[in-house]
Length: 350
Image (tube, rainbow, N blue to C red):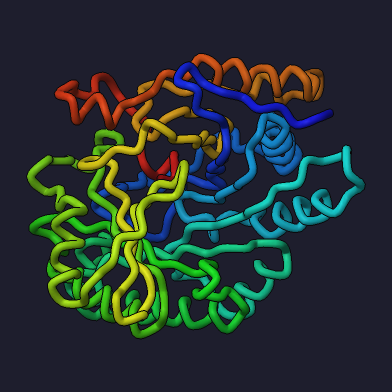
């Protein structure tokens, strides 16, 4: 089966698949609010591979594994190993994925596990950390135990960054990055310390605006710290040079003038990138969402039973993407409000 290019109603091609492996998480971050429950009908490995292959046949080139916390998913390593075997199969049997990435909070990431992940074919790791101050970190992550718990968590994440680099994830090649959600009035004071830490370690810091995903996080617009303000603060401390935003990328990028690396900002509230968004999100139980702010998803499981054909699954995804009109962030910026219930961040994985 030859690869075909699938485009939506605005001409945007399918390029990135974000596959959640679990809705469970070992943190309860204020902007995500997982409920600790797992969906009753998780996709098995065969179904996951079928969805990945169908998306690849429609032009998808990048797979990002998410959660919840994906390191809690027992099937993570077996799935990566299965993809690696299929990527090495004779041409025509499987459409190889060019890029496989994973987002984690890092609390379970040891050096041996990082090495296993890399050997199984994982190419990039992004580790989340929203503050270095113990009390701020504990509050943001929803930890009980105050500063002591926060300090332990921060140290585990810093150790995870070291473990990932020791395992071969090279920050200079963009293989290891740090995600930080910055909220006004919550952790904005952590911006400069996080930047200093990532500069020292040679890591790309990806600053994320606080987003109104789902209903649980009590989102308020006055808690959004716009990317422009974040970058302005950094620029006053360490001069920055703009690099722009890669085609279909989510992040605007700047380089430090002194050569200390790169900082990026995901500004989906203040500077939406809907015009070339190419991401399809699939939850751990097989619900496909064409936008992070979607009101409804499409259950793919009817095309994932033993009687369904790969062609039927591929056509179902092609039809879903072909009908896509989502421009939620742009419409919000133009004054439209998001209506109706929306899927929660813990299920969509960002």
